[in-house]
Amino acid sequence: MPVTPNDFVWRSLLAACRIHGNSQLGKTALNHLLESNPSDDSAFVLYSNVCATSGEWEAVHDLRVEMESSNVKKKPACSWIKLKRKVSSFAIGDKSHPHSDKIYSKLYELKKMVKEAGYVPDISYSLQDIDDEQKEDHIWKHSERLALAYGLINTPEGSDLQIFKNLRVCGDCHSAFKFISNIVKRKIILKDPFRFHHFSDGKCSCGDYW
Image 1 (cartoon, one colour):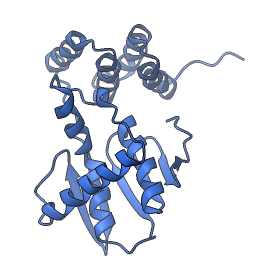
Image 2 (image 1 turned 60 degrees about the vertical axis):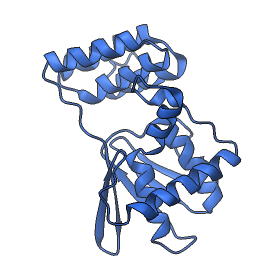
Image 3 (image 1 turned 30 degrees about the vertical axis):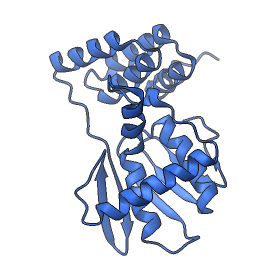
């Protein structure tokens, strides 16, 4: 029986277009999402990811102009973790935490460990028009990784961690979390607006589809 696509279907299709590098189909999915919600900043960001993956930087620029002209504000990414009844929040590249030095030390320790384990950063998830080294550094400072580093240095070894994010987790963070879960031998739960991701032993409960 034919099913009329809803926003969830169009959003899933848009996310899949990034994997397959199909910006034309992605544009169709974006238009359908904007029909129901012209202020859907997450749809703009998803399509920007599609274009950035294909190196279509002019299209990324045009999207930013369109967002500005339509008065669509991109929601800043934020992740948080609750430990001992206290919530600690992080933005991308955040250094405002009083234990920032320890957090970044742990963050770069993790980076070295995952690279030795075979992790290869997917710099296409950085929407900045900068060189590759800067892109790699930019995505490694995503908010959920800062929250994870903070959690790892403030909880007993082997204990589970639960992190929350206000935006959809990017594919590179998803990949990094799988590697980290296997290295530190912990179960890591990451909740974004679309689902719970349960990382354990190098795998995620979503089967890499979200």
